[in-house]
Length: 82
Image 1 (cartoon, one colour):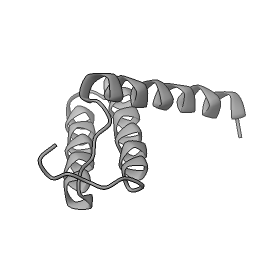
Image 2 (cartoon, rainbow, N blue to C red):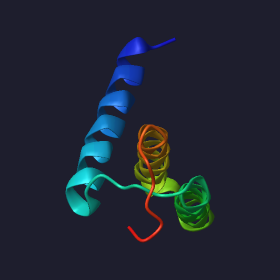
Image 3 (cartoon, rainbow, N blue to C red):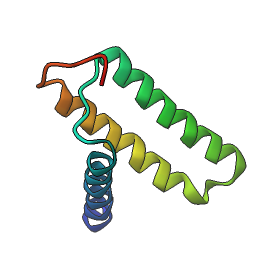
């Protein structure tokens, strides 16, 4: 197991979490809305894979960051209008 590569990936995910929070703020969504967001990101990754996998890492990092933001939001009250 190459722990350095894992560390690089985790750093990229943390940076993407930060990027998402800067772009959209801290998001408060229902679990259903989070699943929709995550599935949209997974769909984008699948689309990239069908065309060209050069951006696959970027798309999977966005999936991971969305999952982390969803987990974080579970600790907050959600507002369906946000």
